[in-house]
Length: 125
Image (cartoon, rainbow, N blue to C red; front, side):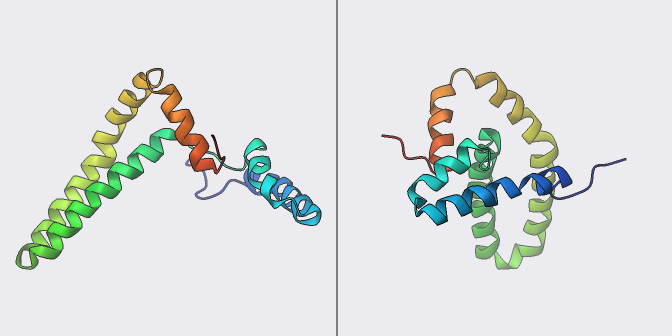
């Protein structure tokens, strides 16, 4: 009923092309062109929404973890609140943020393109 967890068979079977690209660049000693070639062939996929969620999640986790560490006497209660917050963030807040992200895509197109290129390891001048 649900798809298998992890990496799909299609991705595993298609991964050989990246080995061929890497081998070609190692053999020719052209490592400076390796990353752009891998990106060009689809080896590095960046999803702007997930990048945004990750950044926000790291900030929020830092806040929660510092609070839990500082308030040792209230740690069990704070951990319970964090679990509730986390479930709400994943199941309620994330879908809302996704819709807002999709609606603002045209507005932030160039900023997200620049960020994607940076995360893919392409040096843009």
